[in-house]
Amino acid sequence: MGERVGVVWDDRFSAYDFGSGHPMAPVRVQLAMRLAAEFGLLTLPGVQILGPVDPAEDVVLLRVHEAAYIDAVRRASDDPQFYDSERGLGTADDPVFPGMHEASARIAQGSRLAALAVQSGEVDHGVNLAGGLHHAMPGAAEGFCVYNDAAVAIAALLDGGAERVAYLDIDVHHGDGVQAIFWDDPRVLTISVHESPASLFPGSGWPHETGGSRAPGSVVNVALPAGTGDQGWLRAIHAVVPDILNEFDPQFLVSQHGVDTHFEDPLAHLLVSVDGQRMAFEAVHRWAHRYAGGRWIALGGGGYEWVDVVPRAWAHLIAEAAGAPIDPQAELPAGYHEFVLEALGRQSPGRMTDGRQPWPRPFDQGFNPDDAVDQAILTAREATFPRFGLTPEPGLWF
Image (cartoon, rainbow, N blue to C red; front, side):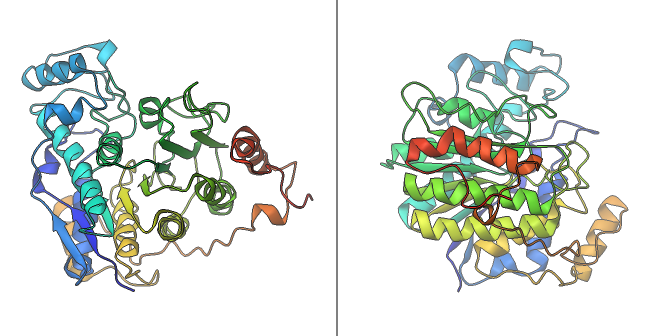
């Protein structure tokens, strides 16, 4: 069944560019959008492009960021030598670049537009692949993220009257910025499924982080061991997310779909395939309809294998949102191969699959106390499930 989908795009998103050699290259998103276009996804009857996009105004950014920080980003935009370690600007992760404020504010506004289009009923789902900059803190840049567009989108929904918004983050890195911004807001549930902070930046996202004193239980963290692959990753997502969503009863679901969980990603240590990622997208879409009335805002995020992984995964995401999934065995269009070869001098993958067929066993069908993934799942459930009146222990033990 087709869906009404708003895909946010503006060619000026490519101005969010930390420079040559930086992992967060704008070509990642450009290739994903090009592949989606080659598959005809952007011209489906129910799909519309939301754009062009103007930069978010200060009043919008001030909902989630400090005024002094916004001023610092503006100064950094005009000074290539600008450095402020407390604000995270001019660092190796977040080097300054001309127009940094405008480029970052434009992406933030893009996610806000997607959220407002869903809230108004203009579309069922909104997608912003350039978004998902989940590390940005109220007063500092962090982890390639300057302004927190996910938080801006959530704030827009709240300001528009939403009483319950769920945020689901399946990037390999903990969604620390979004968690921090809504730490004490009981209207926002944040769920992050990520590689353990014991082995990966940003060093947060432990299961015992469950929300502030004014919003106990509003934060859920599932920290998975390095080396977790498709089976364990999907098992963890399914063992925690749907039960919590069912109890929270969100009016909107905002999800972050960083694809740096992939086994080829150079910056992390999970071993998930494009096939596993596609299955996760399917589940999130299904849960948006089941638990949030179909009101879904899907954002991009991390992902640093620019050619082999990000374009295929995010083309699958757009296709899933549009209700027009791509056959995993489908060959990538010839026009896309030619574009990548000419632009980057690289061969792109042949098909939309990594050749895997994950089929995780449900957690409630058996718990293995000697399995590190099962231990991580149970720890997360023990920290959060009782606050929702749920039983953390599975039905069966091996």
